[in-house]
Length: 430
Ligand SMILES: Cc1cc2nc3c(=O)[nH]c(=O)nc-3n(C[C@H](O)[C@H](O)[C@H](O)COP(=O)(O)O)c2cc1C
Image 1 (cartoon, protein in one colour):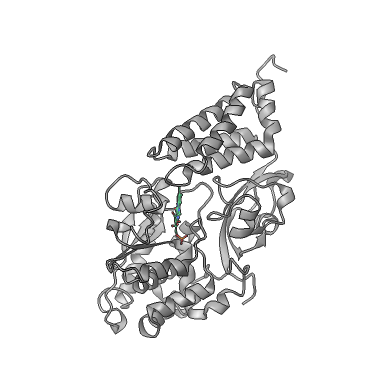
Image 2: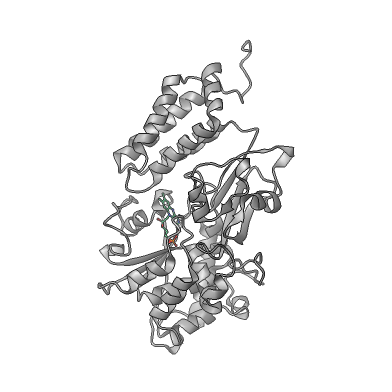
């Protein structure tokens, strides 16, 4: 396998829920191996050696997380696959749910079995109805073959995976908010520490939560070994990443590339550059919650550590490209409004902060802002950053700070002209 061949995305014949094409490429062999040959500790060891890190945004080492739940003193444990995906510009989990339900299911079975979960769930964005249906059909086919249900493959193990329709908000994808909502409560994050899911998860019991893409990597690691996995990517971020590429590119879509691939390759080779001969003005390399980068940073390697070092982040790799015909104040306002609407309102700094950030952004974009508003905007970012039970408000502040840092002249122009320079001037105004 070369460095650029897909590893997570597998092209299969037939309908995605049909089990036969998946079995023909070695599907469920890793699951069989885990049931019959490997102890849970051996599985965890393999994952640790692979260096797999969570693809849901935080990049936490997967093997370490599994180890924590497996060796927890409390024996009542749960497993939840997080398919809540609701961030603007991120759609890779949807692709996997739709096209690779068996691969995901196999990853879930291995995870649930390894940590000896009492019950296991896939929490799925409620808007993903076709994907939900595909998973349901895939589960039925896998069950008919004895891969889940009672006495799985004659190994004396009983295992079911239940589908749970999510609340459909951005915050509901935050793992502790997701667990709250699964217990019939509002989808609001818990305070961390101390309430990390590995200690205090579903029903207050140790719970393993992993992202869809993370779990889709697992069967292939078990099948091919940790050394195979580490052959691509960087030393600290091995493997590939699914990039959701959107915005001002000719070919938006999902691209699987080795971790550490330069941003340039994604935008120019995969995305085919910017339409209508325009130029790139800025790129969100990890969705709207992380700082933007500019074209002089196109050689940045796309992995968790390199982007963090560069003052931004990979998140779940929702790469949004902005062209030079875009007003950065208007673009920032759009995402500020998103954060305002999606704040669950639990923590005062987030509830008030996201409203005030969006209000000040709107004032400036609509030509009603003053220098004092711009100063207040930046001051507010400093106040709210790092507060809140989850990172939503920090993301909202980072967005504004990065926009002002890189495009201050556009903010100043709005203040001076008392209108958006990207919109036609009203009649009689120069
Ligand atoms: C506001 C917010 C939304 C999130 N949404 C998702 C999501 O939709 N899917 C996801 O897997 N992780 C999401 N996360 C990250 C999860 O809290 C968690 O880190 C992840 O599911 C762990 O899985 P992993 O270790 O496999 O990455 C979100 C985090 C925050 C702060």
